[in-house]
Every structure is written in C-alpha cells, then in structure tokens.
Length: 445
Image (tube, rainbow, N blue to C red; front, side, top):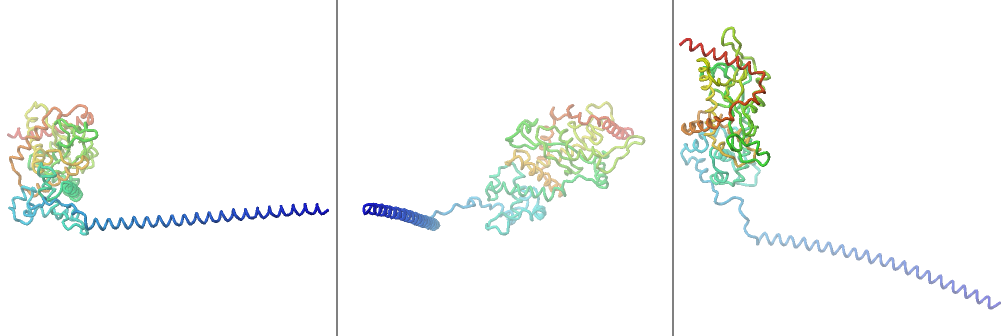
C-alpha cells in the first residue's frame, strides 16, 4: 500500500516538474521574442537616426560646397559678347551720322521709321519687369529687322552690326515680322469689296492706262528657300531651285492689294489662282455688280484682272492673244501689256527694296511666309510714302524677273485649263468686246 502511494507521488512530482519546465520554456520563449522585437525596433530606430544624420551631413556638405564655389569659382561667362558693342546703331540713332543713312540702311527716313515704330511699339517693347538692364529696345528691334530684310547678309553679319547674337536677332526678326503682319496686314493689303471702292479703282486704272474695268494686275513670283527636309521635290521650281510660289495682285500705283504665300515652288500659277481667295470672289460672285457696257448692244464687261500667258482666259481674267490677226487684237495686246507691266514693276521694286527675297533665308520653312508677308506690307508702307529707290537697280531687277517668267513652264497648260473649261467661251467674248472697244480708236485716227 505504501509502495502504491509512493508511485503516485512520484508521478505527481514528475508531472509537476514537467509542467514547471513547460511553463519555464514558454516564458523563456516569450521573453526571447519580446527581447528580439525590442532589439529590432531599437536597431531600426538607430538606423533611422543614422540615415537622418547622413542626410544632414550631406546637406551640410552641399551647402558648404555652394558657399565655397560662390566665393572661389571662376568669373561667370558673359551673356553678351564684349566685341558686339553696336556703336554704329547708337550713332545713327543719336543723329551722329547723316540722315541719308536711314534711307540706305532701313529703306525709309527717320520720320517714316518713327511712324512705323509707333504702330508696332506696343507689341515689341521689352518687358518692363525684365531683370536685364540692356534688353533690346523696340526701336532697335525694328531697325535690326529692316536692316536684315534690306540686304542679302547673314544673321551673324547683321547681329555684329547691332551688337547682338545671331540667336537673339533670329527671335527679334520673327517677333517683329509677326507683329507687322498682325497689326498692319488688314490695313495695308486689302482688296476693295464695296461698290464705291471698286468703281474708284477701275477709274484710276482707266485714267492711267486707258484700259476699262481693271481692278488689279495678277502674277506670281518665286521666293527662294533652303531645301526642305520633307517633300523637297514639291518645292523645286522651274528656275531650278527650291522656292515658294507667291501670288499677288497690285493696283495702278504698284501697291499690293492681295497676297497668297501658301504654295510650293512646283505649283503652277493657274493652280495657285484657282484655289486662292481672290478667285473665289469672282467665281462665287460675291463682289458688288460694277459691270459696264462698253459697246451699245454688246455684252457687259465685268471687273477684270490682268494676267500673263500662264493663266486661262476667263470672264474676269484677261490675257494676250497668242497670235494677232487684226489691228484690233494687236492694239488690245499693247494695251494689256502696258497694264500688266505694273505688277512686274511692283515685284521689281519689292525685291530691290527688300533684297532678302532674292536669296534663301536663314529661317525654318514655316517662318518664311510670315517674313515674306511682312516684306509685302513694308513695300506698301514705303510706296505709299513715295520713298525713292535706285532706278538702275529696279530696272535690273525687273529684267531678271521677266527672264524668270519667260520660260516654257510659264505658259498655260492644258491640264490646268480644264479647271476653267466652262468659262473659256465667256472669256473669249469679253476679250473680243474689249478688242472692238479699242478698235474704235483706230477708226477715229
């Protein structure tokens, strides 16, 4: 009996000891886990403090380097080249040079320059809040642009003349030309659309040339450009160079009243005219009715444009007889040539005054039409003030322009004339009516 009791007690002791061991192990494991977690958190905290300390150190080192470089660095390179001082412009602006220099270098007098400056000054003046004390003034911007347009020099040559970098000059020319087009285009180049204006224009043409019902002389001229990167073949013209085909209409004084510079050099003059705004004015008959009956019992003659052999014969577009079989037709050709010479003279004076139109410009293709448009506007501005040009230079330019026009390409081609197949007979009737009208003068003699 005592032996059984001792066995039970022994089992109880063993179980108790095992329970104590398990409890101790469990507590030890929990304590180990807690200590490990605490150590990990402490490690992360220490690591974070170290990272912050490193960032503070790097930040302090960066500031130190900035301060050191600020005091020890080499003298910064100048924004403006010291060799470009622009003394010539300062002298001409202050009146230290003869006044004739204005007409030679800017194609206008000082008074006309000031007048043009007042029209565009608001848009090209430098920002008053600019941090640069030597910002280019509005007068200098306009002068640089006119000087570049009047010659065939490069951007660098013009920039050195005025003491600015070529990159600055390029931006200035774009800004000024865009402003000229924006501010003056609708005022300086405008085709008359009211009945009173059309009748006045017709009367001025007839008083000067004796040709009735004329409202403008039409022609195209090619403006050379650099070879485009894309579709360059479209811009290669009959003059064996890359160009833009520019259409214009002038009045009896040689002032341009319509302008289109959106076609590549390979486009034929007839295609340019067929898709132009002025063509739509006539074909859609949106102009006021100013038709006039020249011969009793004959058809009424509408307002006319005068063109060369490149254009089709239309009721509103007259050109010469290809072959004359009567004195009336010969007289008609002579009368028409005298009128059409006005557009040739206008192009000649334009390219003599703004010689940049005779060579490829140092600008991207998308910028060139704006510069060309600005030249046409400036031409009208100068012509309306009767500013003089060298007659010999103008004559040579006109001859060159005629030589460029007198080629096989510059004749009306059958393919494009099909665009106006329905108008050919009406154009022939109008031309015959005009020939009969001129024939009356032969009968009187």
